[in-house]
Image (tube, rainbow, N blue to C red; front, side, top):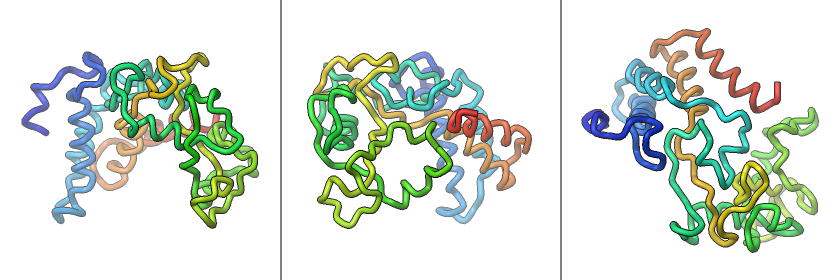
Length: 229
């Protein structure tokens, strides 16, 4: 990764291509886990790679959900996407699966810009219970679909068991549809700036350098967006 970085496009210059920022993000992840695999920690190296990613030209998307919609190619937060296009990169896997399979039961497939539901993906109860539903954790759970769904999952073959949580959609941020109802335009955000912010905080806490105030600023920026204040 270090050998190829100087030969890659600059961040922000080639959407969908592996840029120097993508290389640094992957490098940071390798360094973050180095002690597990090699016995030698590389926290300072991880911090250096993380700071290179954060240096730009990325910023948090004002709305978290916009990172997972059909026009997420306009999100300023995505460091490296796996690009999908309804007309030119058609596949039954990828985002086609993730969007269609998260829809079922009484859900309206048109609400997600697709031509049908596959009745597949739901949340485990352990995941659902991590959200503070009783306290009105609506900013993060607004896309959950609970009508006719139980929280607990006793049988994965019963669609009514488990909360539907269609994280991705073939709708745009302005409510329009993707270019094809069968194959979404939504890109998969492999690396996002929010992840780099959290990695900065961990690398700092593990002795990789940086500052506590900066780590707190990054974590708070993500929390404030998620909770609406």
